[in-house]
Image (cartoon, rainbow, N blue to C red; front, top):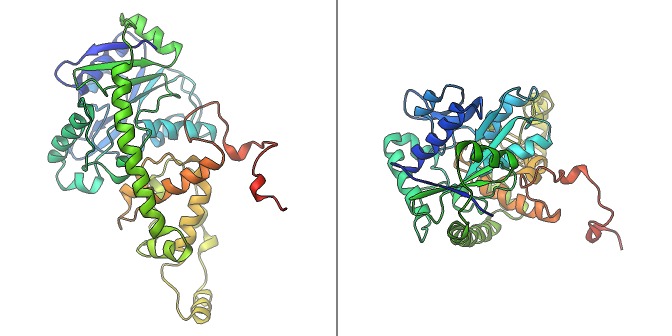
Length: 375
C-alpha cells in the first residue's frame, strides 16, 4: 500500500490540525468532531467545529480520555444520519466502539468520515487532575517515547493502555494517521477508502511512500504490548478467577455505577440495575441477613458487574474508560479485557474491527460450539 507523507512542522499536533483546517477550507468536510481543551484548562470536551479557526484550541490526540469518543459520536448521530460531511477523529479504541454501536443502531455512520491515529495511550484521570499543566508535559514525553526509532514502554499511561495491542488498528476507518517509526519527523496519512484517496487528490498529496518504517515501529510496540498483556492477564487469573476471588476483587465497589455510565457500549436509557426491580423492601434485606447471618450493603454489587460483563463482553473494546472513572481504583477494565478476550475468542470475533462482521449473538452458524453438546 502506498501512503502520503507530510513533514512535521513545529510538532505532530499542529501539523495534523493544519491538515484538518485545509480540509474545511477546501470544503471537503463541513464539520470536524474533535476534542478541545475547556476554558479552565483542566479537561477536554468534544466539539463539532465548523469554523476552522476554532481548531486552534483542538487536540487530535488529547492526553486524557475525558469522554469516550464513541459516546460523543452517538450523541450526534443516534437520531439519524447527518446531512453534512463530518470528519470524526478518534483513538482506535473509540473508533472500534463506534463500529460496535453502529451495529447496535446507536450510531449512524453515513456521511461520517472516520479518522484514527497511532495511539500511545492516555494518562490516568486521577494523575492528570492533580496537575494538568504537568500532565501536558508528561504526555509530550509519552509521545516521544512512542515514536522513537526503538519505542519504549511508558509507565505514565493508564494500565488499560499499557496492555492495548490494538493501538494502530485501522481496518474500519477511512483514514489512519501513522507516526510510529518516524521519530516524530514525518506523519503518514494512510488511506483506507476511496473517499480518503479523493481527499488526498484534492489536497495535492501524492501516494508515493511505503509503510515499511511504520510497520517496523508498529511491530516493535505490538511485541511490547502483547508481552505486557499476557503478563497482566496471567496475574489477574490468580486473583479474579473463581467466585470467591471475584467477590474479593469487587468488595471495595461502592455501587456507584460510574463504570456503566462512562462505558460506550452500555447504551441503555435505563439500566436494569438502576431500576425499581433491584430496590427491595426492608423485610427482604432482613430476611437475607437472617438466612446468611449478615449481608453486605450496598447489596448486589457482584450481580451488577457480572450482569454488565454478560451484556457487553462481546463488544468490549478495552478502552479503559470504566477503570479510569472508578473512584475505588478497581481493575475493572483489565478484568473486562480478560473476559472479553475469552468471550470474543470463542466466536473468532474482534469487537469493532470490521463494520461488515455481524455481532456474534445475532447470527447462527451450523458448525459451532460442539464442545458444549451432550455426548
